[in-house]
Image 1 (cartoon, rainbow, N blue to C red):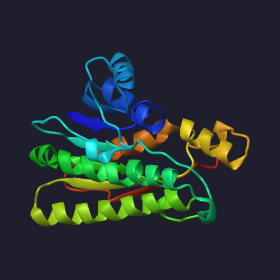
Image 2: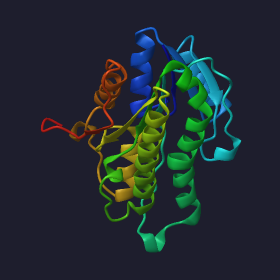
Image 3: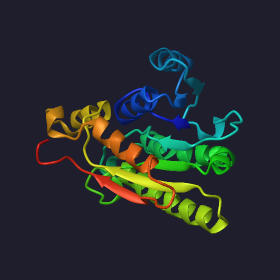
Image 4: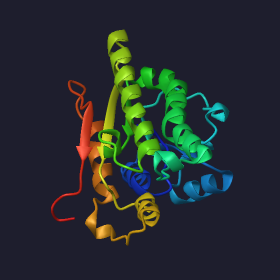
Length: 227
């Protein structure tokens, strides 16, 4: 099987790529720079890497793929601020990376996904279900991503292309992004209080490996009582 993953350098994306690579699946990994692409190629031998600046969606290109079994949108950025203090550049960056780039990559990958009857996974956030103070920009992108996924799912089902679409909504997860969030919030960061990235990755794998007679359209993963 062949899978395209964004955000494979750390956190949930890295955990997912590690599991797919370990079971011998073929990886196509997006990297924000040539140096990052080299790092991913060394970390995941045999993987195909390509440079994709998600902050510049208009520049995105995708080599022709004969077939693609799944596309996983995991990369994301967050910058907390009240609406009254929101920086225009940081707002735009979140919209481009978290929403516009996944939309563009999905469009580019659709022919290959249709040939394989593949799966598109949008790793959003519980911030895409409930918006809290200072999370306006990030939450707006994740709410938008959910809407995009819902429309895509309905379109592909109506057209009979066999492409499945799943939105995953992780709660707070022990990732480098979570550490940055705590820094922005001015709080101490204790990763043991949050879900492990591998747990979210296992949830994605469960969705990916479902028999084709069913699909999971939405799944929320929150830290458990032991976290």
